[in-house]
Image (cartoon, rainbow, N blue to C red; front, side):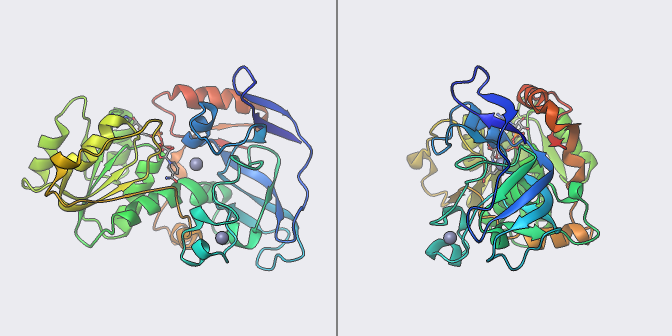
Length: 345
Ligand SMILES: NC(=O)c1ccc[n+]([C@@H]2O[C@H](COP(=O)([O-])OP(=O)(O)OC[C@H]3O[C@@H](n4cnc5c(N)ncnc54)[C@H](O)[C@@H]3O)[C@@H](O)[C@H]2O)c1
Ligand SMILES: [Zn+2]
Ligand SMILES: [Zn+2]
């Protein structure tokens, strides 16, 4: 089959090449024919060498939907022929951490696909613990509707959950990229009254505003974010901050725009260490949460999509054939204004 392989030795770190079709290795595996996959900002972090746990010579990609074509003897929930969305996290469902819902730290899994084992930017992919990692699509949910369920929509939900949003809260989301936009939709769903989107990219802010995802938009290159937030919140600051941008300045902004005793959820993945200036923050009594997504809500998110409560279709801004995936990477890396997410088919 054709696949996009990450290798440190390659000139561009990626190569579109031939690989053997994956086969069932363990009785809990499934083989999925990938109908749509996507490129994630985290794939770029791997290529840039910022993901120490990534293995060399693996097929990239962890965000996909497809059709199950083979299953191991212990797979019960998922059947051959099922249309499925895949979780970006591989998890056994039985270990200490899985039992608590902390699947990112599954003792037998974690972020494996497209990082430690072959991922989905290929024609076929082997999914370990298929009954855990695959969710059957409701009949009225298309592959396009479901493409982002297992990664960025789950990550957006995770970001919103980290903030323990209460009805009526004002939530600022820094970064109106795909993850930030998903966080905004999930924050609204979880009860936020006002959503404030902060980004330096005007076209992304406009999407947030035009799609009614954000109530206020702020571009820090054009306005003083702290002053604007104080104006919006009667000088209080926001109840919750979701940091989905990943810059040094946005990490600082996250605690500055938070009101005292606010919750700050860091969903962004940083390429460098960040500093919490605890003496300056003393008395602000913030709660910080960080982390890689515990994507345990895929079925719930699919049901929200099925019931028209959430839609992520608009995030697909471009489509490329698998054969053209190297071109797709170039576009995604250059981040033109009109590019949010690329679907590979
Ligand atoms: N925690 C997880 O499990 C998880 C899962 C998926 C993605 N991520 C991470 O989430 C982050 C966001 O992902 P994405 O796909 O939306 O990325 P993205 O790069 O498309 O979006 C980031 C947004 O932040 C904005 N931004 C950058 N610098 C800014 C600044 N100084 N001020 C305001 N806005 C600024 C950019 O304009 C962009 O719109 C990435 O770091 C990604 O790796 C984490
Ligand atoms: Zn991802
Ligand atoms: Zn586990």
